[in-house]
Amino acid sequence: MPRDSPQKLGAIGDLTSGLLEHRALTVNHHSSQRLFAIDLLRGLVIVLMALDHTRDFFAPTPFNPLDLQLGSPAWFWTRWITHLCAPIFVLLAGMSAFLRSKRRSKAEMTRYLLGRGALLVLLELTWVSFSWQFGFNVLILQVIWAIGVSMMVLALLVWLPLPRIALVAAALILPHNLLDSWHGKGASWPMMAWHQGGYQQLWPGLGVVFAYPLMPWVGLIAAGYALGPVLAWAPERRQRFLLRASAALLLAFVLLRSGNFYGNPQTWQARLGQSSGWASELMAFVDVHKYPPSLLYLCITLSVGLAALALIERWVRKPSRVLLLFGSRPMFFYLVHIALIHALAWIYMQWRFGGQVLEQQGWQAPPGYQPSLLVCYLAWLVVLLMMLGLTRLWVRQTRHWRG
Image (cartoon, rainbow, N blue to C red; front, side, top):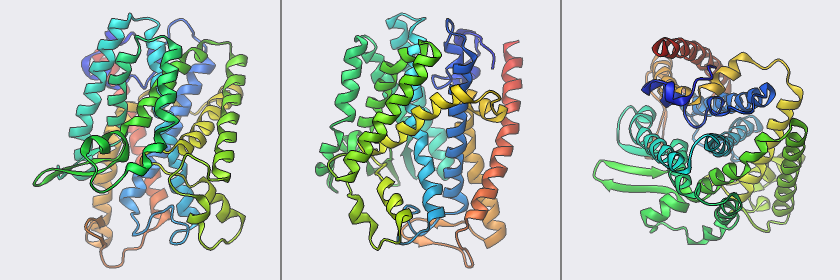
């Protein structure tokens, strides 16, 4: 990926170089191992994200794939592995913001984060919501909205010393499950947007779904920013710290989850039902709440993410060019892939079943339709191949625009 300063990019190119793409932001630390480790990890979670969205459109189910009594281990792990995506994205966004701050004044960082955050929220409200529905019946506020608003909050936090930013992160992440008891059908939209999530009718014919309530995500981007200095450490020290932090998060998860002490709305024993062995026990144990993300959800997903970042840097010497490409163009991938998957699924469902599978006002499926993971995975590979071609084309085009 070119290392041009973000100021040299054209307006469209700058959009996709974004805060999630950190290569252009690092100027004094040209460690190729660190650079490709972050891009490779981001590329990996992008590929997993595409799997989840492909499942949404090509293999929707009348049951929750995480339901241990209605689903199967294959459905469970296909859904669960994609839990890694959002936390790693948001954490890397915070770390990338710190790297950018090393070359910008606080006033410049505030302007940048406010502008970029507002742009992401606008994209979520318009193009991304349209891509999910090919219409505007509902505004769906998901990870791009969460990152955008979190950036705007971070625009104010950057004026604080790093230890205080870390304290703000802890104050938002650690106790947020205490608010679970306040959830209810009569919640106001500020409560839905901040913590509970849910659907709110704006006016007849248009509502909003707060899929990603903000409180823990704002805390997570602040935590990523406070963690940013670790990226400037010597590789051995950085990897050792990341692995120890990963182990600490995993230990906290196991201790809190094993006794149902704190950090998740549902207990794991109660969700298991009739046990069929250690595999079912394991699935029930790691089945944690994502909407909003519970403390235990963040513990286990970030444990995997931090360990992966350290081990990729330590062990991988010939990284996948495909993953690096996707990881260096995350915003382009995100803005294109949902509409692409939706369009391909519509064509497939019309051809195969004579109608699209819907999940509105109850389960509706064309005659003969059965959810198939084989179809899901085959469609996923097709989507990735198409996105590979489109992303390569985008890279060539943006280089042409820059001259």
